[in-house]
Length: 444
Image (cartoon, helix red, strand yellow):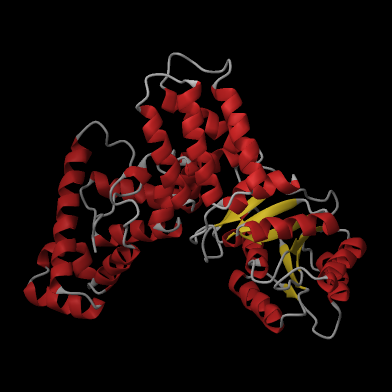
C-alpha cells in the first residue's frame, strides 16, 4: 500500500534532515520534490498544487519551532495536511432508527463492488448485525452467482430473482429483510466498463424508490485519475455518501486515495487491501497519513491482533511457557493467529520504521507456508518431542511437506534456539505476560 509514494517521500525528507534550519529556500526545494512525487503518484494536479501551497504557507509561517529539526517539522506539517486532504477523521456508517438500514454499493464494473458488498456483510456480522445481500446487478450474468457463492461462504442470506428488474429486486429485498429479521440490506448494483446513461438512470431510480440510508461509491485504487473522474460523475448523479477504496494492496500509486476526497468532498469510509473477505478496514485519515510517511499504524495493528485474540488460548499458552513446555503444536497455533491478521508485508507497514529495514519489501510469504507444511507433516509425538526427530524422520517429514531435509533442519534449529530464549525469558522478571510469538524470520 503506497510503497512507491512512501519511499520517494522518505528520500525527500532525508535530504531535508541534513539541513541546519528551515529556510524559504530549502523548504521551496523540498516541496518542489514533494509536488513531483505526488504527481508521479497520479494525484490530481489541482489537489497537488493546493496541498503544496498549504504546506509551504505553514512551513515558513509562525508554526515553525526552533526546538526541532527541519526534517521533523516538515514531516509533521505534511502529515497534518495529508490527514486534512483525506478527511481528518473516520466517518462511520449511519444506521436507521427503524431497521432495516439500506446500503447501496455503486461504481464501475471491475471496481470490486460485489466483493466489497460481501466484505461489508462480514464486517457488519462481526459487529453483531444481521445483514442481507441483494443481487441487483442483473447486467453482468456472473454477478448474481458470485454474490450467491460469497453469501454461502459467509453464512449470509442473498436475495436474488433473475426474472425481475434490478429495481424490483431492490424493493422486494426490503420486505424480505423485514420478514426475516435482517437489520442491514446491502444492495449490489450494476456497473459498466465506463459511465453510461443507462447505468446511471438505473442507479438513480433505485435511489429514488428504495431511499437508501447510505450510498457508497466503490472505486478501484489502481485506476488513478480515471477513478477521480468517475467519482465526480457518480457524485453529480447520485450524491453518494462515502467512498470505498479497493485493491490498495496492488501496485497502485496512491493518487486516487489522495485526490478523491478533495475533489468530491465526500469522506472515504472504507479501504480494502486484499482478496480475503475479512480484508476490509474503516478508513482513518490520520492512520493512513502515518503509513504513507512510513510512521506505521500501531493502532490498527493492535485492533487486528485483538480481533484474533483468544483469551483462553492465550492463558493456556502462558501456562505452557511458564513450564517450558512450548511445542510445535503451540507454534503452529501462533502461526495460524498471525496469518489471520493478514500478510506479513501488510503487517510490516503498520510497524513504525519497518519500511526502512533492508528486508522490509523482501518478506517471502511462502516461507510461512513452508513452515506450516513441515509441522503438519510431523506426527503428534514429533511435535511434542522434536528432539526425537532423527535422520530418517527428517527425510520422511521433508518428503511429506514437499520441502528438503535442509529446510527441516533449519526449522528445527531455529525452533531449538527459540525454546532456549523462552527458557531464559521465563526465568526473568518479564515472565508475567506474553504476546504473540516471534516467528523465525528469513525462513525461505
